[in-house]
Length: 291
Length: 285
Image (cartoon, each protein chain N blue to C red):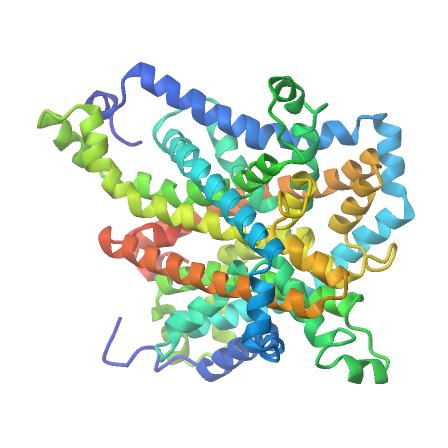
């Protein structure tokens, strides 16, 4: 990329091959990414703007949007606390079983969402381990908000931690050690030194976790019970309308989620750009100079 | 670091942060998963084997693995080209297109599912040109491959991009100045450097595809023995109140997840030791 044009020629593909690769690569992206994205909005507006707005003002659609937002609001703070705590322990200290812990943090990415849903059904469901006790005490977990929150916590667990661990490892311990040796309390050190250093990495992780929390389908579909207006998240609402052959309604709700995905991509790109700049400053400047 | 102090000796919060992290991980992930294993252990081995190797289960493994393998292979080929084009060439709109590669991570799977089904259906934007040629994609096994290709695309591209960026131009220049053709340079110099990352991306896409549910069920047609994936079979067993059957299949899938996690870790370790800071940093989520 940074190679001057004169030097590049010797190590570049011939022009015909370059054009062929460009055509194949961009053609593939056109058919597999751009066309689906356009199709969501085309289908949503297929019956005109009024039908679109009416579909979104439907009572069930609105309660699905509210529930989706509520789940994200409940899950993300816990996810942030876990991610920061795990990254702090892993990046700043040495202990036995560290690589096992890192692998276990990745585990939720490897497990099928359907299996995740089933796991919580087996524990809290009517025939599950705690099922009889929960029923006797009249506590609803499965087919209600608590189970939806629990599976979403499982699914989104790795996002913040995975983003922060390499970042905090790269930043080292010197700044925090300086703060502590100058008499800062643990909380002061965290608020004044650590948090400003990791804020972009943290935001990046939160953006990804949020997209997944709001969009999760498989795991939530197993434990939600699909009660309209009550335990339907937006992705489940999309499914129900689609299976009822209500294409405009399904794609109207889908377009809200697609819009969320686009916002996620823009936010992610901006934060990525800030993050790269900070990491570059970190690798070129002395650690003390980059505040 | 400064060995004089011992790593992190000065810093506070080790016990607190590790304690919180392990507690959260145990409560949310490890204990629930062991609940699954506990439930399955109440089955006799023969009964477990009976369910796990039933006709419908075997067919669902074939569909799931076959489609995942095919989709990951398609992604390996086209993902390599896309990553190469995005790193090496300049063209208008490149940054937007680069950002768009992450769309499958950001777009909820149910949205991807209904959209792809609509596109490839007989009257859809793409399906209407393929159906007259005798190519039925939506509501047939090829539809599963299309959905899984969509889901897996970013894994290959995002794993390869940092590796292609890191290739020193001097290496290619040296090969060229020693008289190697562009093809020879690619086969002898670039390919060995790219291979670990390509395999890692392939494996990440493959392992994500095996567990995928949301995007597939809308486009697959879901015919038992023909286009029924294993996660869907678990759901349909649940809907028939066959919790034991669902549990047995879930354990099979969980075992596969562990194997895939192990393989990915091994590949990333291989990539990292072979090429300094290798693909491990760039691996997408």
